[in-house]
Amino acid sequence: MHAERQRSEGRIARSAREPLVQFLAIALALFAANQWIRGADPRPSGEDITISRGRVLQLAESYRLLAGRPPSRAELQALIDDFADEEVAYREAVAMGLDADDTIVRRRMRQKIEFLAEDAEASEEPSEAQLAAWLRTHKAEYRLPARVAFRQVLASRDVHGRDASAHMQSVIRQLRAGADPTKLGDPSMLPSAMPLTTQQGIAVVFGEGFAAAVLAHKDGNWFGPIDSPLGSHTVLVLSREPAREPDPQEIREKLRSDWIEARRRQTREAFQARLRQRYRVSVQWPELYAGQPAPLDVKKLQRPLDTIDSSGE
Figure 1 (tube, rainbow, N blue to C red):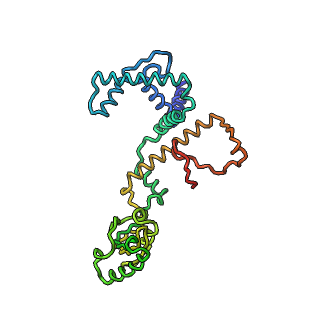
Figure 2 (cartoon, rainbow, N blue to C red):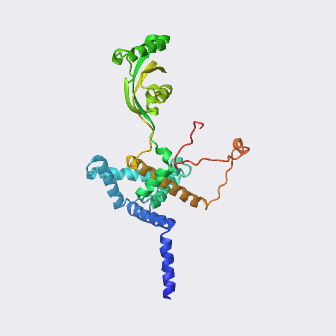
Figure 3 (tube, rainbow, N blue to C red):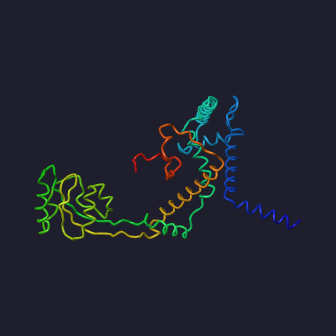
């Protein structure tokens, strides 16, 4: 009898460690909290609306967080009246079936249940060992790109027209001979110098071609001409920082947030897969698509409310 009880207790202990059991326990706790806030029956029923003490306190606390002070009795009554109007409208909408095909309502309900699933397992903090393992696995994503600091002088196309490049040749000769760069070139809104900046950052200001030429150049003298949308440039590279692997502590917060997001996504997808097994999905394809072959590879949306990329990539 004693051995049987020990085996039974062992089975209960193992069951308590199961992720699905933990998720259900958290869901029940949240449901109980929701019951306390909303009252005994949160579903629309009949014509009686009871606004519980918990809901009133929630309305008052929301006002305090926004206004920086508790609401007055009149202000709290206005909040309660507004909540009652919202509840009446909600019940009438549900009674008319307006929620059945509402995409926003469906997405909101999906989001709520996925948040429950994520929080069941994905709320723990990663250890340093886990972050180090994550960095090793995703090293390419965190590699810091090369950066360049430089000065530039412009021969504006507005001033020199088609002769901008030829004029810049003359400017380059003067600069290489020791001329002061602040006395040469045409004024513009472009910065005359940039600190250590990645190729992408340079491209935002000067264009892709200009950025690629600056990163590729190895000489330590003025070089060019390099064209940009505004004209022709000469550039002097001041310093370089090669691409490198980051120190884990340097990017720890990003590693942490990425690790947590990945764990949430994995938990959510595993939860969705378990739920999906309980359903059979059949699709009645419109005539336009019915005859087309099924795609071999369908990319799953990374976030539950992502929209489909229409860029064609």
